[in-house]
Length: 438
Image (cartoon, rainbow, N blue to C red; front, side, top):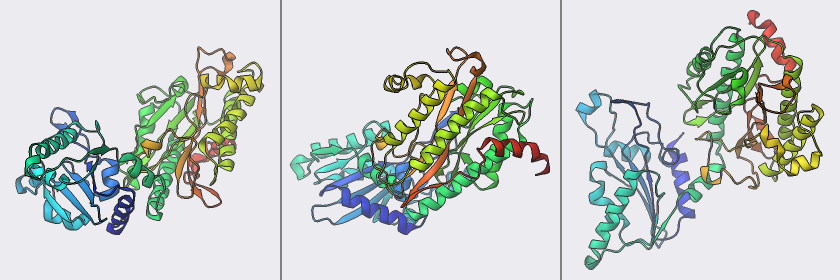
C-alpha cells in the first residue's frame, strides 16, 4: 500500500468531517498472552487504514478548521536504542513524520502536555468512547486542561461525535490496491483448504489439519490467520464457532473447515465441508447439496443494486423447500418462512462485509438493506446444522455443513475470490480419490 493511498483516504475523510473539528484515532494496545509474553502485535484496523503505521502507543489526528484548511498529527513512541536491542522497534518522531506523511509528530510520552493545544478552539471532536480506556483518559485530561484555562482564552469543543460512520463508510468501498490484496488473501486461503483436503485422513486429529492449513498460509507470506481456525469433525460441525480443534477425525464423518489468512492486513474467509473417507453418504449428500445450491443461488443474485436482505430471503426460501422435501421440516412452507423456523438449522447471517477485518465495517455490519455497489466485498456462507437432539430424522443427526466464498461486487455481477477451492461433490470426491497422484 503506497503513501499516496493513505493520503487519499485522509482527504476523503476530511470531506466528511464538520468544519472546525478534529478526529482522534488511537492505536491498538499490546495484548498480553501470559505474564510478560505478548501476542504478536496487530494494529487497530481503522488506525492502519489511515496511516499504515504498525506501532502501539500512538494516536493519529486529523484537523479541519473553519476555513477548510487541514493538518495532520501523530503522537508516537520515541526511538530508544536500548529498547530497540530488545525488539521494541519504535522509529521515533522524525522518521514517522516522513514515513506516514503527517504535518506534526510528537512524543507519545508528551501527549497530555500537547494534545489539548491542538483541540483548543475547535467545535467538534470525533472520538469513539469506550473503545480503549487509556484513550478516554487522555481525552478527559485534554478537555479538563481546556476547562481550567477558559480564562486564558482556551475553549472546550461543544460536540463529541463517533468517527466510525465516516471511516467505515470509506472502508466499505475497496480501492484497486485493496482489491488486489483481498484477491491474494482469498487465493491463499483457498489454497490452505486444498492442502487440508489433500492431507485429510481417518485417524488424524483436528489440530493436525489446522497445522496443514497454517503451513500453506505461511508458505505464501500470510503468517497469521484472519480469525481462529475452525476444524470441526463429526458433530463438532454443528457448533458454529468451534475452535478447540482437538477431536479425533473418524471415517464416515464430515469435517467442516472455516479458515482464512490475513495477507498484508486484509482478511480471507472461506469454508468447506469434506467427507473424511472421500465419499459423501446419502444423508450427507442431501444436506450438502442443499447448502451448495443455496450458495450457487446467492452467487447468481449478488450484483449492484440488490442487498443482503433480498438475497437472504431467496436463500431461505430455497433451504426451507429443501428441508421440507427431506422431511426435516414439516408444515406449510410459507408459514415456516414467516415464522423463521429455519433458525433451528440455519441460525447465522448469510453474508458479512470483509476487508481489514474479517467482519468488516462494524458500524454497518447489521445493515442488510444497504444497496450493493461495485467495490464492496462480502462473504456468502449458507449452512445447515442438524444436532443430535433435533427432531429431524435420525440419519441426519450430527451433520453440519457450511460452504462459504468471498466475493467482490463488480459492475455487472460479482467475482468469486475463493473459487479455486473445490466445492462440487463430484470434484471433491474425484480429488480425494486421486490425491495420492498430486
